[in-house]
Length: 123
Image (cartoon, rainbow, N blue to C red):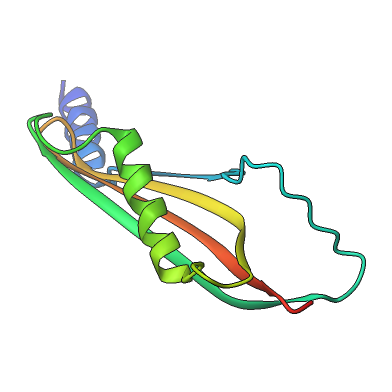
């Protein structure tokens, strides 16, 4: 009986002290237009790495935005930082990362980060 109590106590401690978080990362092509770029010569330079983040919190599974809206907000924030308007720049190698942490179903937080590299074409 004492071993069973010790086993249950150990399982409870393990459950209480483990982290409750999950992360994923996806590489996606958001550029769905038909622009063709020939990279046979050195006609571009990498300017910077830009990223955008969006997060939402849930309490008792209530609140926040949909997952799709989170991605759109993060992607929009990244494009704002890239300053693509009236320039010969493009964002390449877009990476989407998602982290979910907290103690579901009581409280959890979902954070979405979208990042990519800005290249500028010189010729």
